[in-house]
Every structure is written in C-alpha cells, then in structure tokens.
Image (cartoon, rainbow, N blue to C red; front, side, top):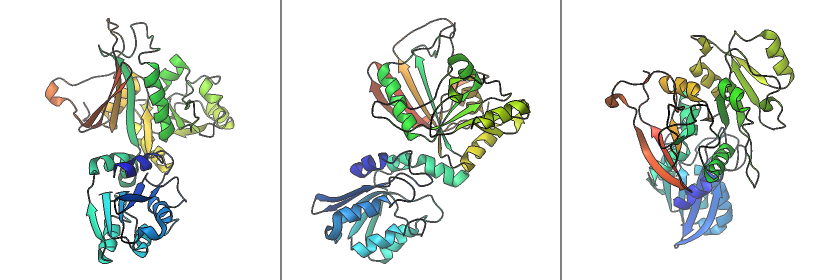
Amino acid sequence: MNQALELARQGEGRTRPNPAVGAVIVKDGIVVGRGFHPKAGQPHAEIFALREAGNRARQADMYVTLEPCSHHGRTGPCADAIIEAGLSRVFVGTADPNPLVAGNGIRRLREAGIEVFCGILENLCLRIIAPFSKHIRTGLPYVVLKSAMTLDGKTATDCGHSQWVSNAASRLEVHRLRDRIDGIMVGIGTVLRDNPQLTTRLPEGGRDPERIIVDSRLRIPEESAILQLDSASATVMATTRQAPLDKIDRLRAKGVEVLVLPAVSGRVDLRALLAALGKRGLQSILLEGGAELNGAFWRAGLIDRIMMFVAPKVVGGEGKGVFAGPGIATMTEAAVLHDVRVRQFGDDTLIEGEVKTCLPV
C-alpha cells in the first residue's frame, strides 16, 4: 500500500474533479502491475495497473488507495474491470466518500467472490484524498495554511522585514506544494508589501496554481507583478461592491477574473469566497496570506491543515505573528492539531497537522 500511495502522489493536484489514486498488483510476492490516475478523463489507477499486469492479474492481489469506482463517468467502472480480470483479493486503503460510490464498489467485488480488505494504511490514504473528500461533501475547497516563523513566533521583524525567515530548502518545498495545489491565496496587504508573483518555480518546471487575491476595495495597483504574468492559470480578484466599477472593467479586460462577493463588516465574506472557488472546481487552497487574512480565516473556522516552517532564528521585539486579531483567553480553548508529522529541511523544521477544532473566538 505504501507503493500505491507513492504512485497516487504523482497525480496530486492534477486529477480534479477526481481524487489522486494509486494501485499496485502483486502475484506470488512480485509486483506485476502499477498505476496512478494522471488526470480527469484518463483511465483510473486500477486500469493502468491491470494493463501492465495483463494475464498475470488472474488470481493476483490488488492494493489500491481508494475504493474502486462502481459507476459510469468518463470511464467505465473499475470494479467491473477488476472482476473481469479475475483478481483474487483487493486491499483497499479507504472507502470512497463520493455518494455515487460509497461502498458500492466494495460490495460489487465481494458479490463477485473477490475477498476485499478495507482500511489498509487508512490514515495515509484519507490524507491524500482530503481535498477531494471535503469538496465532494461540502462544495468547499480544503484550506492549507502555510507560514514560516522564528523560534519566538515571528514572521517578520518590527520593521516588517521577512525575507527570508525560512531557508532555501524550505522554500523549494513550498514550490513543490504550489505545484500540487489548485489555488494559492493572499490578501491585498501581502501584494502591496511584497509584490509577489505566486507562481511555481521548480528546477524541473511545474504547474502554476490559480492565484487568488482578497482585496475588498480593489486597491491593487494595476502594474502589480501578479497582473502581468504569462501563465496558463487564472488570476482571481475577490472583492466586494465597494470596488470601483471602472477598475473592475479594466482588470477584466486584462483577463483577470473578478469575483464580486458579499461583505461582512466591510470585508470579503470568506465562506462565500470559498463557496465560489468550490464552484470553480478548486478542491485545495494554499493560504499564504498575511496575519490579517490568516486571522480572519482562523476565526471563521475555515482552515483545515497547518504547515508551519520553524526556523532556528530569534528576532526579539514585538515583530509580526502568524495571526492578527483577537485570540483565546485560556489554553483550554486552544485548537488542537491531529495527525501531526514533523520533517526537517536543513535547519528548518516543518510541523504539519490537521485542524481538529477551530472555533470562532
């Protein structure tokens, strides 16, 4: 199943509206077929693995990260293909949250006499389909907050200087993450301060996520770098009715997609924004905002995963933190991360986990 997960990761960020899935076929202790789902419209992981295995699939075992589909979409049901190939056993990472499947694939395999074992490395398999799972259940994208801070919890100095908190290895990992995410989001404050491009810059190339700027009054300078890019991915401005109509028209003439959304206390309604992005088909958002946007998302309970790069640096002073705005009064109210994992990038430490409780304060 670990091999199937590695295969699934090759499709991350490229399969929407489908999930990333990997499959491995084993016969007599030897891997005879491998596959992953590369993108929507192409065969699923199981089909690629069956093609590679050929006749060796008969009486073999399949390990697949997600329950085989049982319905007709752009491709035929994988459960039927597995039955026709004559496999003996199927080991499934996790059941499919899609209501069109939801156990029907496993049921069909068992009815055909195939032994099915479900829940193999389930936590890892659930993690890889988390964006798909949330989107298909709620219509909203999965929000990953990424930030970098010093040992004393600062993202910038008292003067606002922040380049760079993290090291080169950490920043390269962030670009790998951008390559696998559907959209990247910042607030207008970040644009005015840093003039970012929000593109993916990897030595081996990569794909750009959609770029989303939250700008309630549309203050963005029209010469901003993010508005001048030659990129296959869209730039989306999220604003409100406070934005000047003539500026909306000029940005749209440049090819920028402008979403005019409801306002809450004069600012973009973030839940309405996520709903609009979900309707665009985005399953995952990387939140790289400043403290104001981060704090607003946090208080609204809209962050699903946190990725915090901690650098072995101390800046002192008041500095800038990850979140702005009111916080909690006691530690008993603190949100708790689960499924926590720790990785090292040079001297930096990445702490990553899923948000267990994120209650408005």
